[in-house]
Amino acid sequence: MYNENEKPEISASILYFDKEYGIDTARKISDILCKYGFDKPGKIYAGCLTNNRYKKYPGHFSDLFIRAYSEKDVMSYGMASGDSRKADEYWRFDCNMTFYKDSKLAPRNSENFFEPWNVIDLSSTYGRLKDKAETDNFLKCVKDLILLLNPFYADIDDISNSVDLLFEAGEQTQVSDRIQQIYWGNYYGPSFCQKYGTDKMLNLPAYSIEKLVDGVFYTLCENVFDFASDECKKRRKQIRKILNLKPPKEKYGFGYGGALRSEEDKEIIKKIAREKRICKIFKKKSPKIFE
Image 1 (cartoon, rainbow, N blue to C red):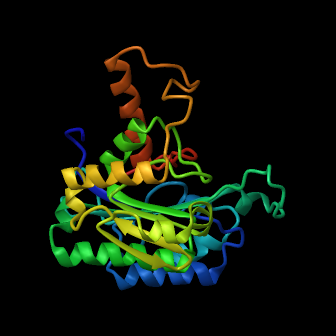
Image 2: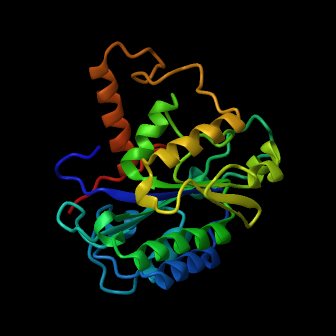
């Protein structure tokens, strides 16, 4: 699942809409990160504010994050506790924003207009999460961010396994109008609850399930490290059937929806998809990283 130079990670992705990019929202996000120990990065990326590269930042990260989140010219922000290739106990936080921020487009109410979403990703290596207290903090941090941002969707899983699951479902990229796959941890916001029914969501055959903000959050088993267990696979199959999840007509291809011709092709595409997930470029290119 991983290359030799990669460290296994558990990752959470939170997809939400925000056209204002207010200072208050940025401050609340940074407060949540501080509360759960994601407050001492070894390096920070903040677009033009860090000369488009990762840099060590002498001050408290929140000052730079608040400025990056609210300023027009910064489209992405990232910070990490160190170098994932060398550190066993490592965490990373990324926030990718949309063109609304840069172009100052007025909101459009047309149903045919594509509304882009922001993505927050928080991940930690297995080594950091081996302590149950750290795992609990990670999950609490994700839930608090969901409570704050009221996203339309969020998921938690092993970062490589999540790519494999998306691939197995016949999907190419993340979309906002349908549920594509079932992961270890899943959050469905108001739009999905309205589409499928909140009562139906709350009665899914999950290990744990709760109403969170205006949506539903559930997990497939007790321990996130058991993401590939028979229990998870069984519950995933049951939930996919209940929600009537079907793969799209077009399968994975080399950018044109063509059929894959060999197992070697499949592995190539899965590798590309995995790199995209890790670099957070499902929606757009990640900034070039300079160590």
